[in-house]
Image 1 (spheres, rainbow, N blue to C red):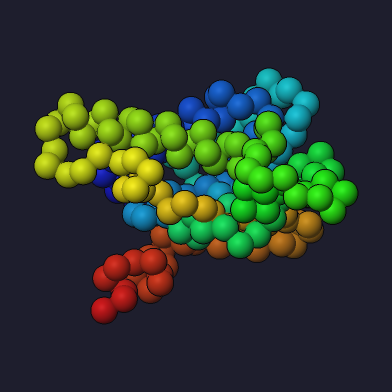
Image 2 (tube, one colour):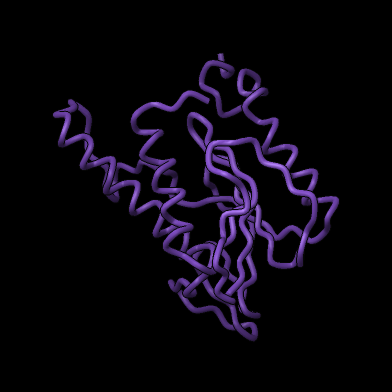
Length: 187
């Protein structure tokens, strides 16, 4: 992928997210022209190095630790999955504990908290970029989103699933011309 200047902002903020959040471990990811795919591990024990892959390189893993903590985030950032965090379940920004829902709430050190922070940082940086370059495009806010409102996520529960999803992520750029999210392929 050759990134635009705004794509570079997204990439920088993506890596910065893992520097800021010691509970997250990045396994695989690819930034596409209008979406991203990734495998992220949540581990609330502090780790000295939480980037599993070198920046800007193809990703491969030879082994897997505990698969219950792996979460795949993909698609065009739409939510129709759930992620478990410390026994509570997050679903579209709601938290269910012992069958009771609490709206709206984000659990600290959770996927939803991570994504919200990432999106907010990207929106701020891109708005700054628009201002600095006097671009004739609207800035991003609650009614004009840079990202779609939600995202799709699910827990990876086996090594086979991890390998299948990781291969999908690695091979995704080569399938961009046929991708349903590619505006050119919609014609």
